[in-house]
Length: 75
Image (cartoon, rainbow, N blue to C red; front, side):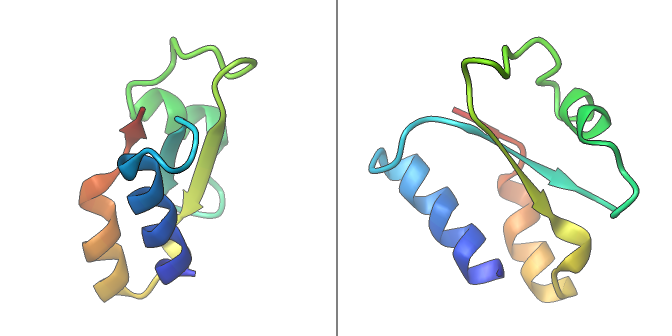
């Protein structure tokens, strides 16, 4: 999963996938809207701008440390 997430981030940054927001979820109990607001994207119109939520809690500490600094990504 971490490899796929890293690949998505790279493709979005490279411009080969459409722009979207990627927000990390810190726990399985964290509401998506809370994560979006914590990321500073509360004003983003989610009806017109795609949002991906990454379950960071499910990643190993090594992958989390690698992926988390690039989040949130609001492109």
